[in-house]
Length: 380
Image (tube, rainbow, N blue to C red; front, side, top):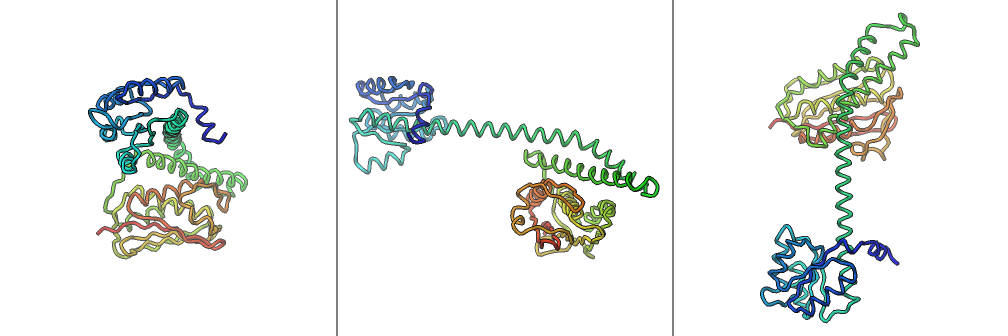
């Protein structure tokens, strides 16, 4: 038995209802007996108009529809059924004595799923009926799986949002305290071992806070709860402030952040928070993957219809096989001091850049460093 046969054998026929439509009583009775013996639910109609009414009332899974009837033809009834949202997806097998190719073409044009020629053979009838019922059953399974998947995604995103929201505030407090401690102590005062432990805790608190912030924003973005507010922004007022925030973090690895801006205003149309999030992620990643005592160059300049903000490091670089999927495939990576990255930040950068009408790109040479850039639309 092939896979299709196995699937059909697992179908509980009593779960499916078939509407029989024919103006000849003997035909209706014969079909009703055959299908009832096969455990299907059965309902009947003796004309085209009644077929339309029964289809809406009974909501059958399949309609066996005679073509030649006294009021309206099966073809006309099919047209009505296909136009109604309640009945448009019900499969139809036409019962007909017509075997002219033009009639078959017309039948498929009005929505036929199959044809059964009178006088019909019992075995052929059951094969054609089971084929349509199997398609209905498969569709139900897909719809249920899709519904379950959507519910799982919704619950997952809600959980992510709750976790990120509830943990971000206490994590911000811990980060601030550790930053203050690290700015006030030296290895000579507290000893090198304790200083190294505090330094490690400080870096991990930064990473954890950034991850929670990205997770919260990503979840809101995926669930449509993050509104894009486009406004005119002069990048000369935005980028230096973001760089300044990361100067202290970079200094813990003795890394220099070198910023080159524009001497004239560079006004873009963007969401302030989204733009800052992109630049922060790029700078944070550059620090993670740069060796101690290196330099990270940050530049900002007009580039055609966009402003281009680039963050260039001289770190470990990225292998060519990872470049194409870097902004789409979240994967764990490790920095030069063992800093762990989830890859979520880069996905968020791509999402935010797209939302503000821009884009992101990366250029990299393994072992020499990487340049991450974001393009932001200039105000026209």
